[in-house]
Amino acid sequence: MVRALIPPAGVHALRSPQNFAKIEARAAHSLTGHGRQLYVLLADKKRLGRPFWTFTLDELRSLMGVADKKSYERWNNFRQWVLEPALAAVNDYGTVEVSMSPEKQGRSVHAVTFRWRWKDPHAAADTASENERHSVARRRQQETAGAPP
Image 1 (tube, rainbow, N blue to C red):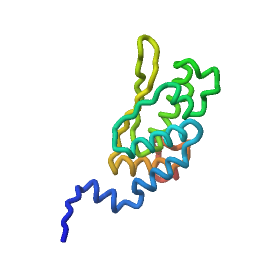
Image 2: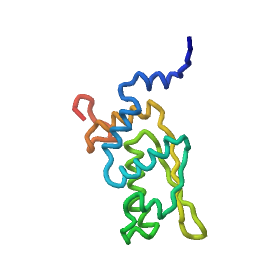
Image 3: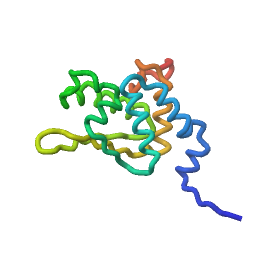
């Protein structure tokens, strides 16, 4: 006979119909373009049990599929047009909160470190309910309680 003590948040996650696997699959299908690509890259790494991963800049450009684009050779353009929108999308739809920090060698950026933290089950359930709403109504408060969102 085995007794397992599960905290209340864990019980909520196990009993919730919107558990992490469902939310994560929904997030992966809801993302588009660079957001989906970044989510796939980080999903593989976060399952290794480490709270961060560092990619060199050339490796990251290649994995994101923009290595052949001349306009993304500059760090500022790559960050502004590829990484920041992808991070915003992943943080908005996913079950993790991801942050990015550039690693410099002298004055130039040579690598990027991504750090992630799992959302607690309640925050993940809130994310799932927001993802169910229409894109125009997401993250907005409803003015009247009687009207549909």
